[in-house]
Image (tube, rainbow, N blue to C red; front, side, top):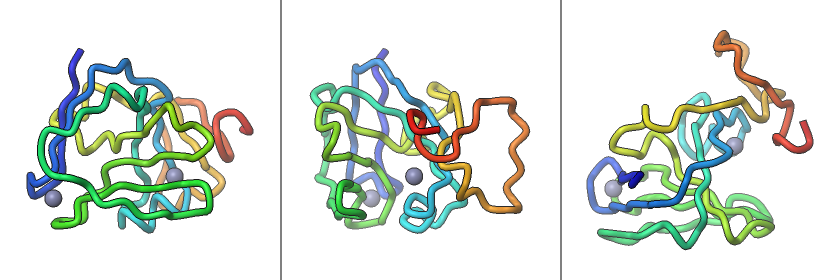
Length: 133
Ligand SMILES: [Zn+2]
Ligand SMILES: [Zn+2]
């Protein structure tokens, strides 16, 4: 399956043939603040499967170990990469042309969930990361 997507203004376009894994809805404060949204859906693919078809995203280090990619022209959140796992890259699910293709399979950093965002989908919830629960 080839997944394609890009930013709001269309300057940055990408596609990947990688099999998505670790699909999640992240409630952490960093995701919230860089996106301006209450939570951000992400999935991972092997870094070498991501191809840039147009434009070039800008990157910004958002924490000592993490770099986030976004469109410099329109600001759309696009990627997250952690120095500890250079072989995988997270793609913002909602930047896909069809985000319904990769639904979240759990919730991460639920300890930071906003009070008014009610979860009722029955998916597993992790207080922080999936591995640290
Ligand atoms: Zn853009
Ligand atoms: Zn997050």
